Length: 284
Image (cartoon, rainbow, N blue to C red):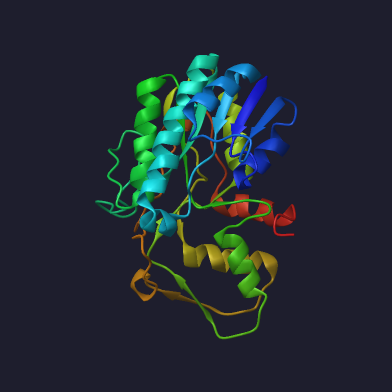
């Protein structure tokens, strides 16, 4: 297949380049490709004639989105609109990456995981702009796949996992890590595997959740990472209120993989994926 990857130089894009190397890949990223320029994007996409577009390009720094609202919507809503128009004009299938932040993160009960049919109610500019992008894509290209992922890490970073591995290797006081936010840590390798599976299912469309199985907190993730790396620095649990940020963090944004499970596909647990990542030298 000819596959065009927007944001192909980013963390997920780099993994996709490696994991989908058997295909003919078109890496669409700045400065040559600009998803905010609809005319140029449509023209260039049609010229390259992709069979599939994987849309990874986005403004993903949550706090920056909060303080740069217009830019966030220009990239995440209008950019997604333009990518959908380009894929439609080129006659290509579209798999677009979205996020757990489309949900409020305020679960009605514990434990809780949001399904593909739950109604998004984003509480941040990032979540709102990504949800607006989802809506644009569905309006223009209803047959597109919207793949929601969360708590992403991968070779080269940047990610929470890379930051904690660096801090854990340093001497110092115990690290305080938030223990009242829950989610599904997910490696870029797992996301690439999900996309590879979806490529074989051309009739699948709509919202698909593609995170690792099982939930944990940031504290749980850090403790497991330090165990795998043999790091001895102490870790202490703390609350979200102890680390105020410009954008509110969801209390629980864990995602249920209802669609993948119905298709007979199951992602690995977050612990298994993290162990595979560490063993493969992903932090090197």
